[in-house]
Amino acid sequence: MNAAESTARIAVEVKELTVRFGDHLALENVSLSVPHGAFVAIVGPNGAGKSTLLKVLLGLVTPTAGEVRVFGSPPNRVDPQKVGYVPQFKTLDRTFPALAEELVVSGLRRSWPVRIAKEEYEAARRVLERVGAGHLLGRTVSRFSGGELQRVYLARAFVRRPDLVMLDEPATGIDMLGEADMYRLLEDYQKETGATLLMITHDWEAAYHHATHVVVLNRRLVGFGPPERALSERCLREAFGHVGHAHGISLSFGGGDRA
Image (cartoon, rainbow, N blue to C red; front, side):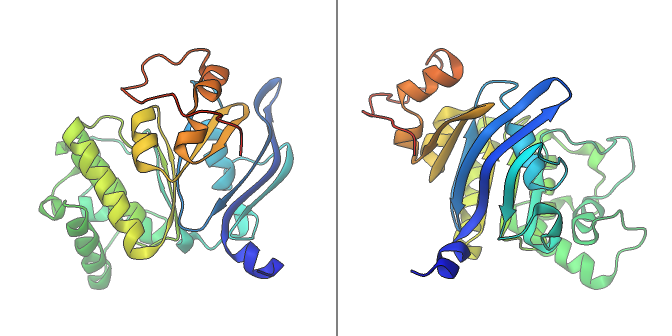
């Protein structure tokens, strides 16, 4: 494989990334390469820099030092069609009389639609049906449960058929059945499109069973690689200071060396 082919197979490249906010060190000297088509779970304690990492990849935070490339380009130069994002905290005012299709179309336009064209409505309808939320067409978001709202945000992220989807704690506010459906939707989308997924999660079991790669982060990179290696007892103790609440995962994976 030549250098150009090797680069083409990398979706996200992070080299010696450091981010400071004033005196606060959010990330320190983080380096990793994410191949195309990977499902990456990012785990770590509160304040580990997980959301900061996603914001850097989205072009919302400028690194203090280091280099970041998404599909070979700086994040702020990436075609927005290629990237979808599902935030943890839904900033849309739930009292605002927004319809499900309007929220989805805002992902197409990257602005709030005053009027929706016929082809935009059809695109919203198709993607809402795809995520099991076709029945929410014409309904206002103020009436949605946490799981329903999450499906609409997934539809909003999928509507452009992006090559990279980033999700910040996507299981927040949904029950176990809804969580299982969400992972099925993510995996189905990935199988159909070959997209790369990056997901922040506190659920080690979800990371172990659904991800192809796991990033263990605590301001610096503690572990990166296949789940059975990155979620080793050594990595988890180094990141969290303990290995409690492992949700039944066997932690006897052996070496657990960093990738």
